[in-house]
Every structure is written in structure tokens, then in C-alpha cells.
Image 1 (cartoon, each protein chain N blue to C red):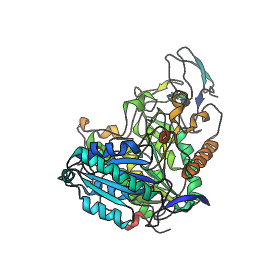
Image 2: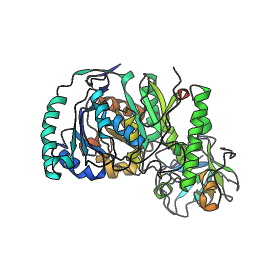
Image 3: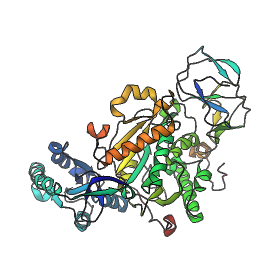
Image 4: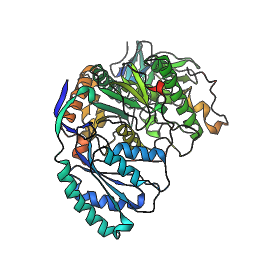
Length: 400
Length: 106
């Protein structure tokens, strides 16, 4: 099935559903200048991302590389202070190699804040003209990548929004799209039912190991992925929350395990392992929902399905976020922020299948250019912190 | 039979989920019995679908989500005060234990 004839073809052959320019700061010291360059263009598809740390980190470098060469990104302006350790040349080379236009501004070499902002805005005019000429091509559903995340969960999340997203995922996977679910720390207690869905016995072992790793990681931190608001909303235990989160994955066979920055090799359902490898080093695996969304986008997600019960408002830089509201009371309070009212299942106004179909249809409409609520409201959250991962092994992606 | 304000996610479950706010003093039918709500409970909270003895697994979606820490009566609110995780809380650093891979994940 062709989703749209208006996808953006990149020189590396990948296809986007948005044509954004990314301004990326390479250390917090360059954040302000980057933000000022973006500001006049914030409603013209120019998005701000960056890494705040001054010390080198392979994970952050890989995330920035995969995000700056994401199919929804047409061009990049890099903002360096000048003395940070981020390797701006290697990032710039990777973007050049992907065929995307890239400019690098070094604040210390450019005469400071004001001059760099002026130059950045001048470069932006040229870059906007360049990306406007990107060829438009058909996007087949087998080239479409959708990620899912939940945040601000309550007990309705696992009853309405998450199983509805699971139905949409089942339908997408059946049509050979790639679907990614994540947060192994929220799958504790689901190991047996999840590993039974793995494509191969080796993959089943890998899926189980990823949850064991998450349990160990959270144990050392002395804190599960369980916020006080979860209990107030009626969720009592980690495994109860896990079951609710797990429902987002639907019922398809699990084709592989990814780590942040790995792109699904073909259509299917994938688990994204977001918990770092090795000893606990840099704190919580993901400090908030936006850090998880950034990782799903780094895996090539064109669109993110975000399930929320208590009412998150976030969107994301680079890829549109569709908010599926699980709780009918939250929906009534915050409907301007919500794309789908999954809580109507509780009122008996729709079935899980009907809401699943609505989510699927909306995902395809967004791929055709329809704006999500968070896009309309200007949300472009982005968070990237320190982490470390070993590369995935061959058994993580068994051939179909 | 259960009150329509309560959702049984799976026939095997021993808890029901409130799908709208239950007010203190509400009288609900749970498992054919009439139960008086002692406190207000918001949407998403769990009630015992039947008597649950201490130590029994709490089943939701046909999956254990923890264990009862004391006997729970029909219609009683099931939450932190009468059930616990069989999972992460067992292994917090505060209790002086470290993670063990011998742990049975059921």
C-alpha cells in the first residue's frame, strides 16, 4: 500500500514524511545561540536538538548522527562553542555523506553570540531554499516506521490506549511496516509472555536478558520506573504497570531487538532496549519521556504514538507525536492536546478495535502531512543524556 | 455479577477496575454481593472481585501483578495497603539485598 506520493526523498535513499531543518548544539554553551537562530523559523519546520555535555560519549555521538540524518531531516546547522569535546568534524562528515546540506558555526571563531546568530540566520535562508527542492516520491507502507511510548500512565492506560495502540501495531506489522516498542524497565513481569512471541529461540533469550538487565539496573538505582502519580491513578505495582505498557506491543511476532540508533532492517515488530550495558554509570536510563522519544526517533521512527492517562502534553523535535489519551476525564480537561480519545472505550462509545483503527488511520494521515496537536501547539521537546551501549549481535536481528 | 462501573479485564482475574469515580457511600454489586463503598475511589483503582486470602497472587489481565499482604474482602479496595509487588520492591538497596539472578520471575 502506498501511504503518500509526497514523501521527501533524501540523497541516501531514505524517505521522510516531514522536511525539517535541524539546528544542533554540540554543548550546552552553544544552546542559546542555536535557540536564537531557530526562533524566527520555529514555525517554518526548523527544529532544535543538541547534546549538553562537554565530555565525549559514543552513544550521544551516535544519537546525534542518526538524528541529523533522520529521513524527516533535510538539512542541518551545527552549533559549536569551539572547545567542547564533541567531534563536530566527524558529525559533519556523516551528514555530508548522507547527502544532506550541513553548515557548522563555531562561536569562538565567529566573534561571539551576536555575530554567530546573524550568520546562522543568513545560512538558514539558503538552507530553507535548498530543502524546498527535495524530490517528492511515493512512500510504501513497508518503508514506514512507527514508534510507541507511554507517559503519565494511570490504570486507564493499560485498559484503553495501550491495547488500542497494540491493535494499530498489529495492523501495521501485518502490512509490513516497522513498529518499535520500548522501555525494558517497564516490561518486568512480562518476560514469559513476551519471549514466547520471539521469532527465534536465540532472540527469546536476548529479550529475556534485556529485561533482566533492566531489573538489575533499576535495582542498583533503588528505584523502578514508577512515579507517585502512577499509584495515585490506581496502579499498585511495577508488574501491573508493565502489563499495561506491554499491551502497546500488540500480538505480532517479535522480529528483533534494537538499541538506540539501530534502524529496523525490514518490516516487523521490534523491541528497543533503552537500558545501558555494563555497570550503572550515568544514572537513570531515561530521565523522562522525551529522552525515550528521542531514542525511538533515532531508530528511524517517522511517527510516535504516545499513550497517556494522566495527560502529557509533549511533542518532539524531528518526528510528529500522536497523543492517545487513555482516560476520558483527562480527555475532557485536555482535549486540545490530545489526538485520540481512547477513553471512550470506558464509556462504551467505541471498542478497542475501533480505536485501534482510528489510531492507524491517523498515523497514515499524519504521514500524508496532517498536523498533530503537539505539532500545532509548537511542541518540539528533545532530551539527550550520557549512556553507554555495546553494539547488538547478529542474533538480535534474525533474518526473516 | 458485577456493577457496570467495574470492569473485569479477564474472567480469571480476582480484581475489578473502576471505570468511573466511585463515591463514598455508593452501593455496588460485586460478585453478586452488595458492597458499601467506605471511601471515594477514582477511575482506574482496583476492587477485589472475590475474597482474596493473604499470600494469594493478584491477577489482572490473567497475569499476576503482585500478592495480597493480608486477607482482602469482596469489594475491598486493592492497593498498596494490602498487596505488594513480587518484583522490584523485593530487591531495593534499602532492604540491604542485591539483585539475584536466581530470582524466579513469576
